[in-house]
Image 1 (cartoon, rainbow over the protein chains, first blue to last red):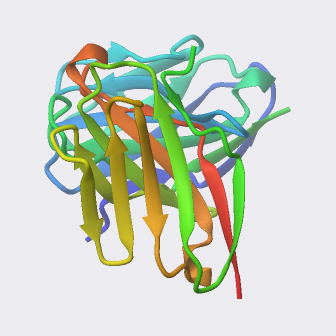
Image 2 (tube, rainbow over the protein chains, first blue to last red):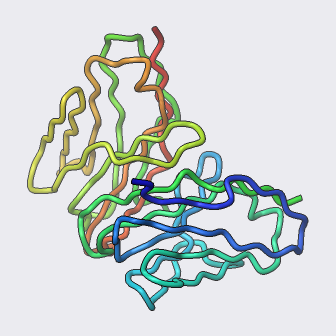
Length: 114
Length: 113
């Protein structure tokens, strides 16, 4: 059982390049999330999708777009990468956004922007 | 303004002793709390949770205590083991902040053999 799978695991970009981070879950969860983790900053929510067909902004959405492709997949796109977007990105899923069920996380994408 | 605070960035403990990780919150609407554990190069994994209607929840070596009046919770690990060395995140849920968790900044626990 893979859980939440993120690709790629590592990526180096140049400023201004675009990139899409992929995330897929196999737990039949309805809700999916994108976080970024920076040193000393904990996990900050970028966007989330409460259910297939819906997306909403989180705490730090600027510079990002998302697509909930289907129930399994939720992608994060950087249209014009900036050095401030250098971070570790985590995708997570949970059964429903309005529940106490814990989130399940992928192992992250480490993104460096030069 | 941080609604969930983990004021100790790091904690060092000897194997076999108790580890106590602390978390404070400011939003009185939070009604459910979770702890996650994160190893390097891996995603966070759920460890233990507690509802605001309880003041204690225990799972093996891990116990979480909640003091609602103080808006404080703590995670106790007894006895601590070297494999417990990780970053621990506190997270809070509740209708006031929706059921999307608000995370603290984490505490890095090092357990020395």
